[in-house]
Amino acid sequence: MGILFLVAIGYIIVKYILPWVNEQLDTEFKWWQVPIALLVGLISLYALVMKRDRGINRDIANRHNQYRKLSDSELEYIMYNGNSLDEKRSARIILEERIQRRKTMWHK
Image 1: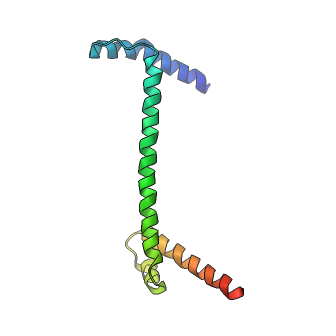
Image 2 (image 1 turned 135 degrees about the horizontal axis):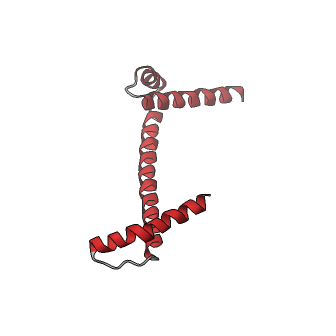
């Protein structure tokens, strides 16, 4: 069903939209250039999304590393009085990791 839908969309693009684009731009695009253009567009969109996600992940990791340098009392203060939910969550995660590490060290 999905392949038939894609074929129908391709037919509509080649049959109706491509002649209109050729007329508007006064060019002569061929039918086989449409899938290439769509593929290039999808690849570039994927690259942009991955670049954006990589930047967001880097920012989160930097903020998390900054919180790791704080003392327990400072993390506790952020956990209860932080400005955003992300700050509170990061502080809570780091405190829980420290508590878990202390428990495992205590039992060894």
